[in-house]
Image 1: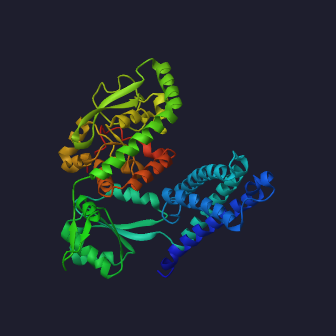
Image 2 (image 1 turned 180 degrees about the horizontal axis):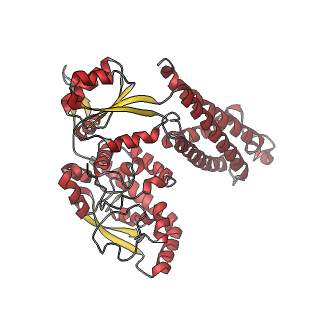
Image 3 (image 1 turned 30 degrees about the vertical axis):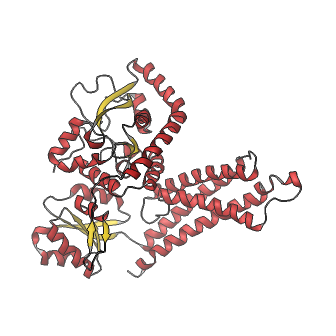
Amino acid sequence: MKRQRYKHLLNFAANLISLIVYGILFAILWYNYYANWNIGVSGIAPYFRRGNWAVIGMYLLFIFFFTKVFGGYRIGYLRLTDIILSNVLALLLGNIVAFFELCLICRDYVKPWPLVDVMLIEMGFIVLWNYFIREAYKALYPPRQMIVVYGTYPPDELIGKINTRKDKYDICATISCAVGKDKLFERISEYQGVVLCDLPAETRNDVMKYCYQNSIRVYCTPKISDILFRASDNIHLFDTPLYLLRNQGLSITQRFFKRFLDIVLSLIGIVLASPFMLLIAVCIKLYDWGPILYTQERLTRDHTPFKIYKFRSMTTDSEKKGARLAAKGDARITPIGNIIRNIHFDELPQLFNILKGDMSLVGPRPERQVIAEQYMEEIPEFAFRTKVKAGLTGYAQVWGKYNTTPYDKLKMDITYIENYSLWLDIKILLLTFKILFVKENTEGVEQSQTTAMKKH
């Protein structure tokens, strides 16, 4: 418990050291190569001491920004592979931006190879450094011993997910809230943490108050009402606290700037992606001479149907037995389709949907009406997702998976809607670049499932 107090200090020190190393490596490169790029024009060095410091500081700012966005500083939280991927992507994007900055500063096209060499050294360092720090974390902070308290159904799926992080959590026991408060509190006091899953409101309140009083860590799966309350505004009109829930979705101003961003970035995306789209179209046509594009009716804001465009990744008779989501090892997916689905390039034609205004760059993924109706039979709140336009990428796509359950997707989509900001859109777009390298995000549903809905 004493060591727990210093966990954040260890994380801060590790991240500070990595930034210092980046700064030293770039400073060596700057002083020995780029700082003297234009010295031959006037015969004197163009930068004074503070100017050099400013260039190095800007470089560190770029690296810090991208590492922060990708979650690369959460060393004790994410998996080692995820931390390394986050840092490598941050270094890649940070050095790309730094290269353009160097070209502007030197007023000339500069050779990128010295910067590339430094970036490779940085990547090698960060891989070894993160491995060393994670090993130190394992030694200092063993997995937290926890108990799961549940309501009606044993949360086997949630426990399975938690068990994928044996480095952080050790589920030692489960207990139903039906045993009564006294027995519940007695068992909870034996562990370092408690996971609350699908409890009745009164029981959950009692457990949370007990844990607060006894300084026991609590992990809780949120209900939809919890997400709404979390995004509410505090109102201080008098001496009684009030929460304000506006429940209006996006404001007119937010919609305007979101639409402006959609138009600008979709046009840029179409131009940049056009060579890839042409190559994919040729490959699909040559494979089986079937249609290149696949159109399907989906739902967007206010439950409005529209035709979505995708590159065809399945056989032409893929839905002869009815509508269903792609399954693991789905035989309907063509070899070309398997490649473009893994890198999400089958979604590129949706840039035209965004330009038309049917979709947004960021938002809940558009669902088929027939599947949405099946979900709403069991989860009526699933319709809440259509308070905003459907998106090419979204909160649930970045932090969830293709086969994430509809209820979990709904909670993530409501989190996005209720916490919307332009910065959140930009962050999700950057994180989308990261998930292109995470194969498990495209994992299909089980063969026995036609939708992502799972039965207890």
